[in-house]
Picture 1 (cartoon, rainbow, N blue to C red):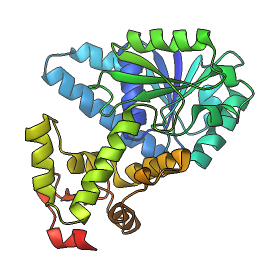
Picture 2 (picture 1 turned 30 degrees about the vertical axis):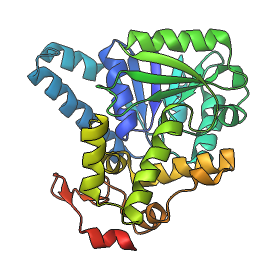
Picture 3 (picture 1 turned 90 degrees about the horizontal axis):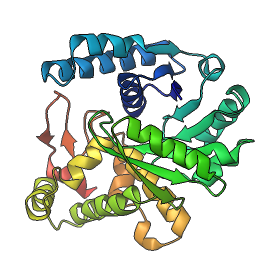
Length: 296
């Protein structure tokens, strides 16, 4: 298996394309807008330059990696001859179902269809296709070129053969695949997102400030990044989407998103991607946002 397509040229998509191409796969990177593809390639180039500067790869490695990536704005053309497609679009269930219907229609019959979803049911996504046995989750971690883990999520109908194939593909990328079953949030986000949500509740209730909460978790729990800074890094809209999936899937009040999180997303305060969340990122550096903002 060497013919790959990646749908979505955003943070996760370009990272996934980068890693596959670096390890010898022929990658078609697909997005609806050429401008998005251009930004994705620019990001990949920048990250490869960083690897060259750190002497992790050579300049020739960089050039050969980039030569293995082709860009497409037409999904049908991008997947027509592929053996594996990895969908990495926005965490929106209706969007993903629509993309999978198109993938199923245009990809070869034997092609495996995978999704980088961080919380949405693989079984539900697979049901939108005529090949549910060939649909599987490949949940990469951000930043993809650095993080070793890939959650491999089996849907209700995912075959053993497909699961074993994707486990081996993940290992070929020098990743550590972990097989999990299809429940809301899988493992990573079922544990992580309630922790982030609880940190937001702690802020909302005035127990402590942003910097104090993050410092406690970094110094007291040996977390490399505090939960509020991590939420900014992930995107508060993504955090809210995952909390809603958990809340809907389990029907349990403990998964209800904090009203502060809801209000911040509604106000467009999404973290790094918007320039402001729990911290200000407007100048490319992290600054503390005035605490009064979080009392609303």
